[in-house]
Image 1 (cartoon, helix red, strand yellow):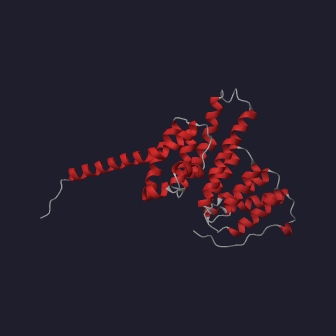
Image 2 (tube, rainbow, N blue to C red):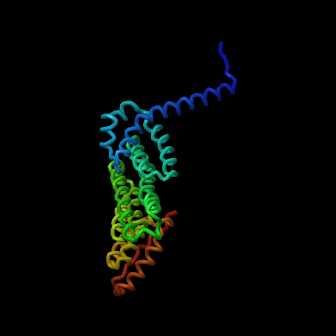
Image 3 (cartoon, rainbow, N blue to C red):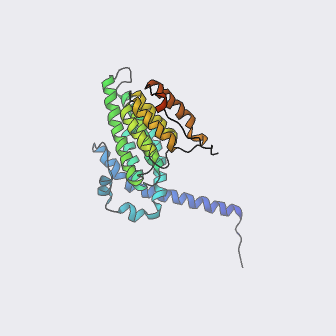
Length: 270
């Protein structure tokens, strides 16, 4: 004989199950967070994977959490956002490293963690020291370099797990470009991003523009010619824009008409 549960009882049982799971996650998080906070209070500026393994015990994360690692990482990422809102930079750095240690598979954790460290933390530190009007340019640049170095270290760790992920190379390129105003290194990392299979089409164009910005017109010209040949003839590749820039560079470099680039007439692929 079958007994049918009322729909309300089914919903209540699901809610209770979810609450019990959250309580369990909270209990699991306490012994993991405690060593991190203890290390922060002791004055450590940053913690790497070896430090966590030493504090937590070899293989404890994998052995104890097992399949709960991804769930716990998601839960702790919510805590990370709360810490970010409070502008607690010491705890933020440790929590980002803890989350990426627990579950290094999503590039979301690595990318957004590096953005917090490279863009937000420098602003917090400058405000703590009196604000942009009172802190000297040299001191601001020193803070930017220090925080960017921490973000680069995080991205380098991510590349150990995702060596062909264009978004990680692109993130490093954008930190060099937007935070450090370093066109040379930005161009280098935009180039590396463009060499990955999942790279957006625009990445190569940015690399060429950064070469031109540095006065490397000949290098930009050669790169754009190869880029035009390699890209598929689709609207998203915007090969027409690339061709316009090639023509512009031919005028700048005074390329003789007989030596100028001749694009192949291939049909447009929708």
